[in-house]
Length: 338
Image (cartoon, rainbow, N blue to C red; front, side):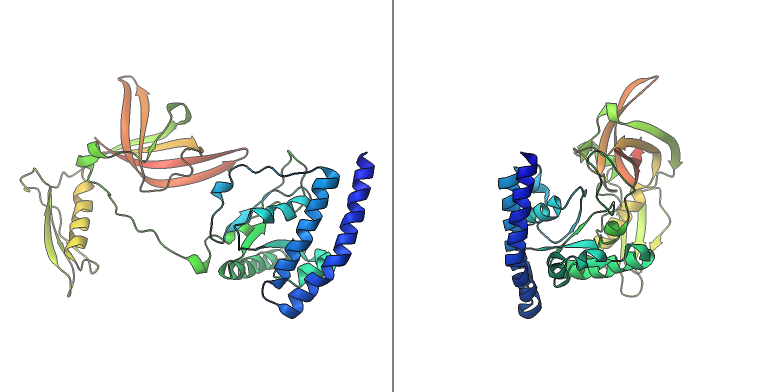
C-alpha cells in the first residue's frame, strides 16, 4: 500500500508540476512583482493536496498565535521537502516568504527554474564567510521588502530527534537596518525606597533558581544633589522626600540635561544608587513563563539561608544567555537594596 500511495503521489506531482511550473516561471519573469509567488502558491497547494490525499500527511500547528505579524526571520528544523511547502501556509495572510537555499537547487528542472525566477536567497555553501555575507545582505533586503525569511540553521536535512551544529546566518539578520531601534529605559524606574509598592515583572520559581554569586557594597547615603546642563541646559536640585537633604552628592553636569524632567530623572538615579546594596548573580532556565528576562525588569525570588527564607525584590542589570542543548539558561545580574 505504501508503494502504491507513493507511486500515485509521484504521478500526480509530476503531472501538476509539468502543468503549472511553466506558468510560475513566465509569471515571475514577464509579469514580475508578486505574480511568481501567487502562481507558485497555486503549484504548492496542488502538491500539498496530493500529499494529503495520497500520502495521508497533514500538518498540526501549536502556537500559531506567536507568529509575528511583521516580516521576521523564521529558523526551522529541516527534515524533508514537505516543510518547505507547509511552512509557507502559516505566514500571515497577504505576506510571502523566501528561503535561504543551496544554489544547486536552482538547476533542478522546473522547480529550480521557478525558484531562480523568484527572490530566493541562493548561496554557495563552500564559500564560507562570503556565503554568510550574502545571506545577511540579501536577507535584510528581503525583510525590508516585506518578505519573511525562512532559514534552516542546520544547513541540511536532519532526521527526527537528531541535531547538527546550528549555523549563525539567521541570527545575523536580527535586527535588520529597516527596523533598527533602541529601547531607552530609566536607570531606576522607581526609587529603591519605593520598591515596596512595585509589582514585580516576574516571580521566579524557587525550584528553578540557583544563586551564583553575592556581593554587598556600602555607598554614601546621599539625599540631595544639584544637577546642571551646559549652555542651554537647566539647573535643578533633587532632594529625597522625607529627609533633611543634608547629605549632598557631588554636583552632576551634563549637556543632555536640557529640561526639568531630565534633571529630575538624573537626580533620582544619583540618589537611588546609594546606601547598602546587594549585587546577586542568579541562574535559571529560559522558562516559557519568563522567556529571556531583559535588563530593567523587576524580579522577585526566594532564597534560603541560616536565618531562614527571604523574599527579595531586585532590578535586573544584566542578562547572559547560555545554550546547552536541550536546555537554554540565563544568568542574571540583579541589584537589590537593603
